Image (tube, rainbow, N blue to C red; front, side, top):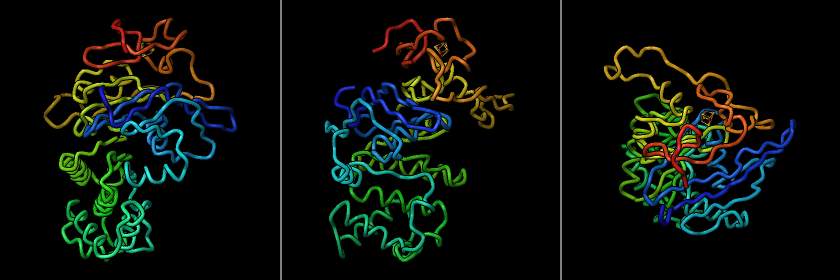
Length: 327
Ligand code: SF4
């Protein structure tokens, strides 16, 4: 990709654990274009949320970035001080968290929390800040912004709280929004509304989105591209619809089989498949391809050495099943 907004190159990230060192990322690459939505998909333990936290550098104390590069709009982030990163986090990239009821402080009115964020990230105070907050709440399709401003978070529904979080995240006009399972705490109808809202705001404002989700079906609907993660590796990456409609990596194929059939779309598909087995313990990772203990197509070579990226149809897959040379 020419001139990506976000470029993660050769990222190595480890954790110190009681059972030994765990190398989650051992050379991870990922890019997001300007104005693009990249869906990052995988089971719990795949590393997708840790990837997001590595980018914003909000990692637990036992985590260590051992190497690689993370650039945002051409600026290297890995060498920045915590103070410099705080500025980047507030101004250039922001996060929308999974559960707004825990991300919002229940003791303060929405108004106080929004004005504080606007002051910290955009340096705006007083009436100008109030006008900005009200405008963002309106853009987030909250019907009565004035009353939402006066509310405590617990007085709002889950969907309204998530709209407040989205409004807050956009007050600094960021280049990148990282949305970590933004619909997992709301019901299915609200999920669709929230995803459509993010999509509309992205089109209007031109920011890029890194959407973290365990649901490959959700990612297909709202992403331009999908990166499928397994045990710390991006195992398949490509156009969102092509990855889901014609999955190439055996793990992606398993995830796609686990999508419930929409009514009337695939007749006779009533049983949900899952990917058999579990994500490996990375303090003692499998040799070769990390997916080999669960792969129905495993070959001898898969147990011996890690495959490189190979062209698989329109996508790239980390798998020996494909012949084409990757980049
Ligand atoms: Fe399966 Fe081998 Fe491909 Fe890994 S490299 S996904 S074990 S076929």
